[in-house]
Every structure is written in structure tokens, then in C-alpha cells.
Amino acid sequence: MNDDATLRGKAAVVGAGISPTGRVPGKSPLALAALAAQRALADAGMDKSDLDGVLASHAFASPFHRFSVAFSEYFGIAPTFSNTLQVSGATAATMFNIAAAAIATGLARNVLVLGADSLLTGLTPDLALRSLSESRDQQYEMPFGIPVANTFAMTAHRHMHEFGTTPEQLAEVAVIHRRHALATPGAQMTAPITVADVLNSGWVTTPYHKLDCSLISDGGAAFIVTSAARAKAIAGRRAVYILGGGECYTHEHIFLMPSLTTTGAKRSGELARAMAGVAPADIDVAGIYDCFTGTVIMMLEDLGFCRKGEGGPFVADGQITHGGAIPCNTHGGMLSFAHPGMPGSMFHFHEVVTQLRGECGARQVPGAEVGLVHSLGAGFATNATTILGTEATL
Amino acid sequence: MIDPADAHRKPLPVPDADTRAYWQGLREGRLLLQHCRACGAVQFYQQALCRACGAEDLEHRPASGRGRVHAFSVVHRAPGPAFRGDVPYCVLLVELEEGPRMISALTGGDPMAVRFEMEVELVCEPQDDRISLPKFRPRPGTRA
Ligand SMILES: [Zn+2]
Image 1 (cartoon, rainbow over the protein chains, first blue to last red):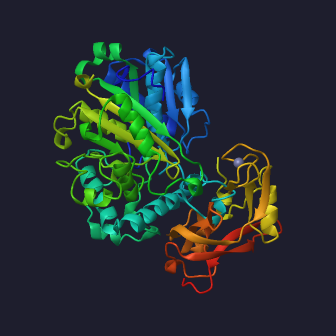
Image 2 (image 1 turned 120 degrees about the vertical axis):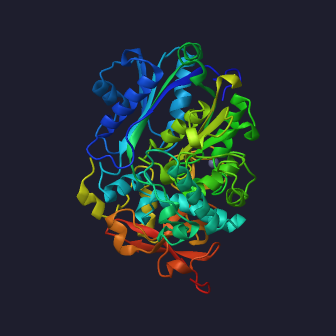
Image 3 (image 1 turned 90 degrees about the vertical axis):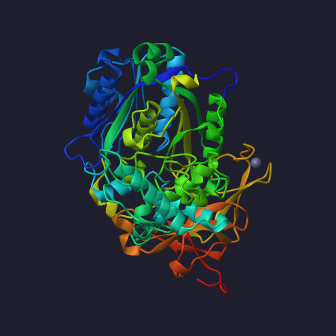
């Protein structure tokens, strides 16, 4: 972080769109990306010829290594700023931070931030899992049959050991997310669940049951980020400003994670809050990467919404849903809305942007002005936070 | 794209320029750690520089092979077909007596009986004529 400079209020989201999500057979990652991008452009009132920047996450089910470049050809544009980013699940928030930086420094005017994949129907289930597991190191991790889920499971397990977090508290995270999804049109999961359902859903990797784990989905999301001045002119009160960003990378291998129970999210959150000039209590709504139930509990602590070790009781006390201290993932998250891999966290952005626009209807958090999205991946190897706000927060 | 046949083979490490000595050591039944002659740091895994001070003067010394379970997770749903026949198996995050941690898997014990801080010891398990994997079993006198 450079203390002499800030992204605060320099750029804003003026368009947001999501493709069909859930089970979407017959649509490639590029097709899903293009559908999302068309909707984001329509939302912004822009034409594709207005785009001069494209940032995209990698897509497992796409043969293109340069997804942002392949997308531009597919979509019929020739941007002058483009990159395909790969820091696993943290990629989403890094794209917003980098888009804002590119706009603030004159590299681009209107940046399309994009992520889409078809992990559910574009890959067989075995190969989808295999492609995720291959993101672990081939010398020191994979020979032991360690799926990515296992790295997250070990952190949650250690959290239970150190702080007494219970399986019921983990399950409550899944139950709340499912309840949120039931109020969200287009969510992949549509049937309510109970704590008992989670605990009886069968082990995946201890302490995680099937319903402690996020979904496998198809889908994508796209956003238009532009300068604050242009945002004010074209979007008015619907513009959602980027107030702060932060990242933190503490390790590559899970065995070099400094602490299994305090993650790089602590630092990335501090950096984002310092830039935005807000405290945890100022944040009205959050999108927290929910690849697993225990991940949410640890992030609530590391992001400062509750004290270390108290995430389980915080969730059980109703603090992460409507009426609580920090409503999280009001769309249902990756646990119940959709999780097409790296784009999973893009739906958190879509929800927080929609909340800050006041357009969430029955699931609207009243008076939401400041929102936080935290993206993470690879067994907490990668962490990125973005803080967003309405015009009133500038 | 991914070849479906690959999913049925267990991935074996391919030693690289940094790690040839490590895998050779395991072949001979020794888990080699790097000790920095400049600053005294002990590191796992092997690399060209000391992670703490940047010195290249690193000495390979065998670990005692003793450690404790810092974290674990019992895998019931395998990451692909290659490991399906092994479930349930216990992935271990072992904290070695010398300090560094490493990922391994339990061998010769009940995966469901593994506990935090349980004492374990090294077992080098040959996989082919080239690679032995460092696994751990409960130390005699401890339950699992
Ligand atoms: Zn040193």
C-alpha cells in the first residue's frame, strides 16, 4: 500500500449483469461471459464500443489461456487494456481494485470486469474436482490426495480445536445461506435445509459434510467500471463507488500458512478499510467468500466483524442475516446461489452492488450505504478485499 | 485440455532442480531438511535460497522423523478417481520436531482415531523405483 495515493472514490461500478446461472448446459464460458457482458452494458446504458479495458478471471472449462483476449475477439471488441488474472478465488476483488487503479492512472476509461465458467456441465464432475485439486503443489501436496477442500477443512478443524467452534455452528452458516437463496430469483438451490440436514448430508472431508461445501455451477457475471466523474454523469445515484482495496498473500503451500486460524484476510481487510476510511461497524452489508461454512466464520473474525474465536456464536446469534450486525451473502452465496469456480465471488459483487443501489426488493438491507466484498482462494493463500459505497459515502 | 485417463492415475512428484536431493533422501529413508549456515533457519521444502535471510549456504540434514499432528482432515470423497479406493484416508499437517510443517498422510493407523497434537513418526513408502513418499504413523505408545 502506498500511503501517498488512494483509490478512494476515483472509480465506480455503473453496470452489472449476470448470465443464466446454475445448470446451464450448452453454453461455453465465453458464451456465458458474453451474455453477462451484454447485460452489464445494457444496465450501464453503454455500447460495447465504449469499452477500452477488459479484465477477466481464468476459466477452467475454456481452452483459452488468455481468456480476456479470447473474450474480446468473441465479443467483437479491441481493448487497449486487458489481462487475465489468476489468484484463484481472490481474483474477483483484485479485478475491481486493478480496474479502479487503471482508471485512476489513465490506463483505461471504461473497464469490463468479467468472470464466467461452466464447471457443472462443461466438465465431468471428476475432472472438475481434479482441475481444482491440481491447483495444489504436485510435489508436496497432491501426492497425498489433498483436494483444495481438504486445505480449507484443516483450517476449520483447527479452528474448532482452538476455539470450540461446533459442527452445529458451521451448519448454521449453510442454513442461513440457503434461506437467503430462497429469496433470490435464479438461485441454484431452491429447497430449505435445517442444521440436521447439513449434519446428516455425509462426510466430504472432515469436519465438512456435503452441505458445508459450496456448489458446482455454470455461470458468469460482468461489471462496467468507469471514472467517478463519468459515473456521476451517466449513472447518478445508481453509481457504486470503489472506496478501498487491499490484498494479502501469506503463503502458497498450506504448510507454510503462518497460522491456520488467522488468515491474510486480516491484513487485506485492514488495508481496504484504511483506504476507505471506514471501521467494521460502518459496513452495512457484506459479500464474504463462502467456499465452505467454516471459511465464513473465520472471515467474520479476520475482517473485524467479531472477535477471534467468536465467529461461531456470532453466526448462531443471527448476526449475519437480515436484522443482524452484518448481513452477509444475501443472495445465498456460493453455498446456495451459484459457484462456477473463480467467478463465484463475482456474484457477491453483484449482490453488494445491487444492495447499495437499493434494488434488492424483498431482501434489501435497509439504508445500505457501505458494502464490503472479500474474495479468497487456494486454502487462504490468496486474499483480496474491496469496499464499495454509495454517492453519499464520498 | 485434461486427458480423462490422467484422472485415474495418482499424481507422483517430478523432482526439479531445487528438490532432487530431497527425493533422493526419501528414497534412502531420510527426510532431509535444509539448515541455513548463515542464520540457522530450518526450512521445508527444499529451495535454492534461505527463505529467512537469502543465503545460498544451505546444508541438508535428516530430520528426526518425529512430529505432532497440527491439523488433519479425513477425506471421504476423493479428489478424482485415482484416490477413490483409498477413502477414508487422513491427510495430516505435521509439525516436525525441528519446527517446519509439512503435508502428509497417515499410514498404519485408524484415520478416524487421529487427534490434534497426536505424536507421529516418519515412514518412507516406496511408490515406484524412483519415488518414496514421506508418510506418518502413530508413534508407539500413542493411540490411533
Ligand atoms: Zn538463512
